[in-house]
Image 1 (cartoon, one colour):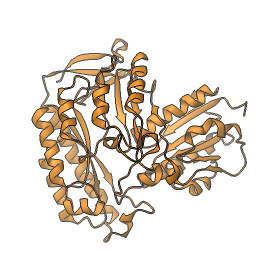
Image 2 (cartoon, helix red, strand yellow):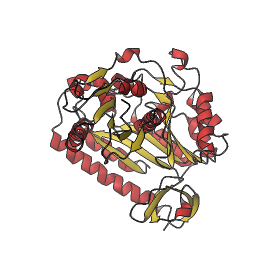
Image 3 (cartoon, one colour):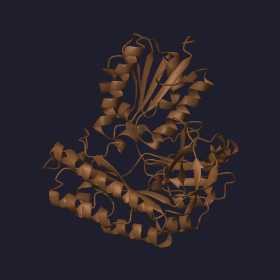
Image 4 (cartoon, helix red, strand yellow):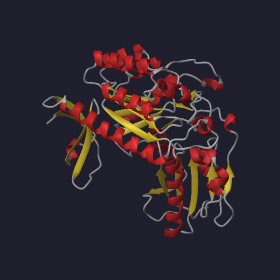
Length: 425
């Protein structure tokens, strides 16, 4: 493989995937590869997949076909959740050379050394039950905000979700190791760290291969708050039942943890929450939002919600809509339910027609737009600090306030990766 020099990456899915792609890139660069843009011709293409929705699966197949047209002699490597869940299906896609499951993706450099074009696709996967090690990952140089993976896997059994099958049991980095990564990132000029994981609030499980919780997310954020050089932390997403009142109170009093929570709801109807096997009811969710807004009125709160879950009637959906309408949240991430193989939700009847799922998605996206506008209007004429990102997009740059209001302004190089006082208009 001495002739292989260039590698290009494409990431599908979540912030966790972005952190892992960045780490895979560094591994291959250390092994002599030169990273290039995915739109360029490369010797190796690596697609880090998601499998939360059917669209992510389709996008992976489309990307492989595009590579085949552009660079038919290039190596194509597929890793990530889709690769763990359906390795044979991916291996059958024309042009795919290597499929790396959850246990093998961080051994990518070794696998590439023995790979030759033209053979049938090589599958390197294992039973997800055997995956019990934690690989730290973080994104750097890709964007101003660095995604730092501190937890992986999930022990929950939500009926719609394939993540436990794709990523295995809940396991974590140690507080000491995460703090060391934060100090290293600070030394490299990083100003903001987004803490990521599959089930972030479950941090502390799986250390040393054990199942018990040895540390806690609350302990982690207390230690990180003391790291010199990092100006901002964000919590990417945290389950409502794991978002303790002490975490909320700590964030309210912290200079470094931003007033911004992203809390999955999935449904505002308790019957549907039960069928989803979520570990809370909407009353708990409302309590958490009320506490956050009581002590941090300026706090941004994002919500994940799924529409069209099996047996979701018009009344169930209206219940969710009404609940979200009255809830003091800032924006919604709306997902249309899609059937995933081997999930218990497939047994739940009746199935919601796809056109109705899309109608409900549109209604909630419209509600999200109104929520976002209202939240931003509440902060007009206030001055808040904005951390500007480096990308020059047609002469413009963007950044976010502490409470996650997006700001777009003409590009000024001296503002890149700087905190700037900004009057909201």
